[in-house]
Length: 416
Image (cartoon, rainbow, N blue to C red):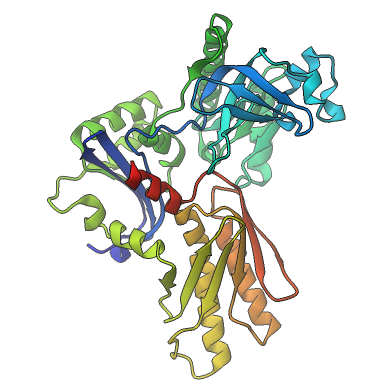
């Protein structure tokens, strides 16, 4: 079966044996199209989400930052903007007046509970925060921030109800973000998830009290369990896995999450053809990582990733299905507007993205393309925004940094 013939939305998980241990890869396919891929690299541990009791190593007033030793290869870079309100109040500052001078908040040798918010990129140190966040299935619990927020995908009356429930569940000084999965969840499940996160934080605090810095206090879930918690939602028709032990672990974890209703959607693949080949994932991944990406219209994208930004050029190529040039250009640009957000998600491209669509003579055609682009960008779980059209007619997009791009990750994995 080719990927294009797959109907609905699916998650595929493959487990491969390597000399350094099992390697897990996962793919999300929407209507036959590969939209996201995840993988772990044996021997290369991600630090994002880890919580430590760290020791302040250096304070740099000129940078408004400090470096915190957490016992890893590199110290965490901690900006003064990432100091939580509780710490500021304990040092006599009023958080609502803005960030305080970091040299008056932290001293070398002082212990601090800190979480990794972003991997180090290149020679840069990983970034840390004392604004701790603990993700659950329905909530992101904020033990040190007194605020409530709702997923941007939840609107209207549902958002109001979730906001009200969050205020009922949280204590003083705590906060929460309602995730998209909370939209259709029973109130009992929402409360159970919230109380679990509160108890998890109390457990972490207990470990911190008796620990000498630096000390690892908490690690997030592994790749597959994170996917089950965050992405195995009601709109996923099946989760297919090709490893029997992993299959059993998945069913056990769904029980743990009280998601018994989703167990029937988990399938064990026993075919002789590799899972990612069988469902056309390998081919789609190779194609999406090329510099030149073909479009069905006969046009193509050219993607160039640099440290400063990513440039995407749209070309009409051999699109001759339309008798007039305006129709051919519009057709190519519309397909590019649908494809570009998928490429950003799949390749984990972030930062500034500049798109050079084929020039359009009619303003109404340009608006059609921009509306399609905006609609597709809204499907991205990572905050991604259409910014503007420059004076030169270039479209500017921004996508929040979540770590290395897929090309860099694959390169690192191959080296490992």
